[in-house]
Image 1 (cartoon, rainbow, N blue to C red):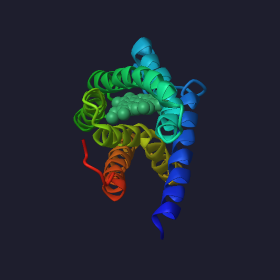
Image 2 (image 1 turned 135 degrees about the vertical axis):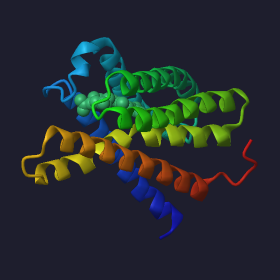
Image 3 (image 1 turned 30 degrees about the vertical axis):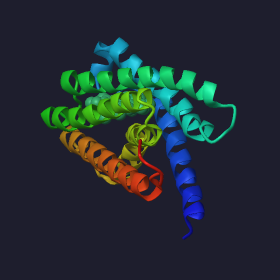
Image 4 (image 1 turned 135 degrees about the horizontal axis):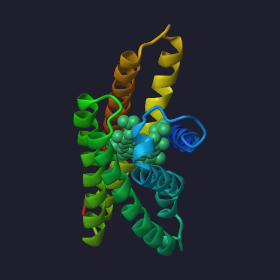
Length: 206
Ligand code: HEM
């Protein structure tokens, strides 16, 4: 498949996952929380979810706006806002994973690992653009965004398996939850790296 065609399919896939991620996140406010910790730490949870939703809504336009003449000012201002929001999303994810892990210690270990990669990508995205290393900035932003939409894939894997289980125990659900999270976030990191390598800007990476 030609690169141009492949790019189109990737855009459709990423766009659908972004919309699904936003949808699943909004749904949080409609259904009873599966994790009682969300009710105990409402500010932490709300900060994570609301800023996460804003990040998912606006981040795709950051990737689209760089190719549009005259949009650089928009890209810069929204970019500053999104980097700060994403940093809070990453830090709150880390705290939630440590303080109220639904699946226990294993979740604390796995999710703190992924949230640190997310935070690291955001910080690197900031450092590289301050140093005017545009190609590297793009790569770090792809890594961060790919992890951000991991929430959609983890739910899309979780739900069909959950509904196919007969009388699952709470322990089964906790194991399934963290397995789906790990699978989804690992796949998202791998695909982000493959995409970055495939589309790496040919000019110097500075
Ligand atoms: C950037 C966009 C993100 C959005 C919109 C988002 C959204 C959400 C939502 C809605 C929940 C509540 C779960 C539910 O009710 O279904 C949640 C929980 C959580 N998220 Fe995120 N999230 C994002 C990014 C991340 C990232 C990057 C990580 C870590 C790598 C992360 C880690 C967590 C953790 C640990 C929980 C609590 C899970 C538990 O119940 O134990 N999130 N997130």
